[in-house]
Length: 113
Length: 114
Image (cartoon, rainbow over all chains, first blue to last red):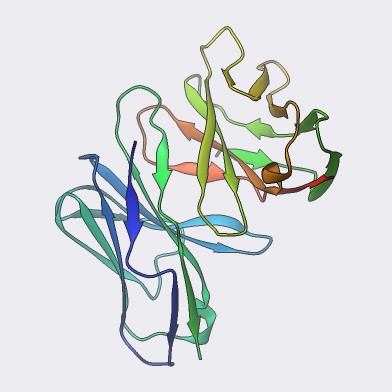
């Protein structure tokens, strides 16, 4: 089974702090994604990566950056957290074989005070 | 641009009955995939079922089946013999074959009643 893990289930930070969310997958997938989920808005793509050190902006990249130094690990960085970044953050991984299914981690509920 | 529409914000079903969750999509692509995910209150998105645009048969996975009507651009999820553990949010998504991006619907919250 595909296993995607995220560093924290719940996180509380203060405005202006630098925040790191980490995601690790164990299936050697090429692609990894960061989404945020807000009520009534569904999932929105922040960034994705298709290879080590490669990244592309998604639909809402403002205020975020990412890092992928190793194939299995994809980090989301909030350089200076703001209250409007309070949300559920979901990481996913995907390989281009078969159905292209994305597999998700358990999510991180981030609250910025 | 692709689009997914889930028109049912919430639904109730009696335990052991079947329920259909609606999903319509819009795309100009010929090759695409349709996905359903379940999200319990714990937050994790659990992959349920996949339908490829060229698949002639409706996909099935255990108690889940996908009623795929290509001409109508609909991909409804059918859950048979509902269980209390099926209570969750359900999301429909579309993805281009060979590309990275999924488009998700806004979800349907299903409540199974004992």
